[in-house]
Image (cartoon, one colour):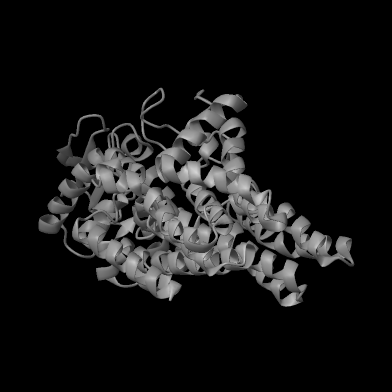
Length: 494
């Protein structure tokens, strides 16, 4: 029944977001889908298109769906697998809560506080990694709790699978490996060191694979951390609130968590955590869920990963969705106070999820959903020039003439998705030697009739003085000029 409720909720949310055109508001959502499609649809398709920074799980899950032009161009290719992950996450949390609190009523409170959160429902319908990670996290939690109760080795096997899932979705999963290993080892009662080492080594195969993948693709095993497309490179060493300041990092993350969860759920979650201290082993699952927020605070402090929220300087929207981990923590902890109710007072349990969603009931507009608002604010300029570029190519592009473009998964690639132009029609940095030849010697080698660049990017500099002339410029306030160029008629095709 829990799975059916979750499926119904996420289907309704997906329909609403699709009907309003919100699925691809996040720039990263568009890029995730394009990266996934480029594995199948590229001048050089295949494994190398996975890249080195973004972990591959979401792209692999979307792969069967991005093969469809209709699903890719509408964004539904990402909605389908992520929505399924939402159902898995909620169902696993229900099982974990029922086992932890020994109460179906508490488990229902947990699942309702989790599933009715509008920020989470929005992320559950778009191609982003947060909900995919939460699915692995919830399965891991269920496996840890069941192994503690039964010491059945099958739950360790499930835990290893869940760890691989998390570690190939978000780097948070790497951070959780030693803590999961410690919990499994503590629960084993015998051969604890062997359990710790075996689980730790097997779970670490996923991070080791990605390090090896980075080495294979770029000759730098840590390209995901310090390479040209890493978060550290994007930040460029510029200071931001929380960098090398633990208290400020905690303040900004706490604010992001409050904006994602809402004050009532956050207060209920903290109260629930206090209650778990009276419930023996019940505090361990809640503490485990708190580790992901700890990871984000650490990332802000040390890894060039800022979080900006509108209430704190510089008063912007950036990575505030990381606060969604606090929704999972607070929703699970919300089940604990229910176990203290007896007799007719148990009727009050229904008030807990109502209180949790009270901010969204009183102010139901999506303007109050921080995750939606972040995607809307940060995509205004991108959506404007993406639509203009798509409109131009719908009327001017002839299949087979080719487009020179920086990447198959950057902001510009949304133009081709919206215009329904296959990515194999483009030449981009992911095409290796073909890209290098066309950008290093554009006077000599020009295999594409068209080119699209942004002001002062690498492609615009490479094409300076080349046989490409600007056909249209898209100017949007606060964004670099996007230029659509065409090769002059007297340039021969090589």
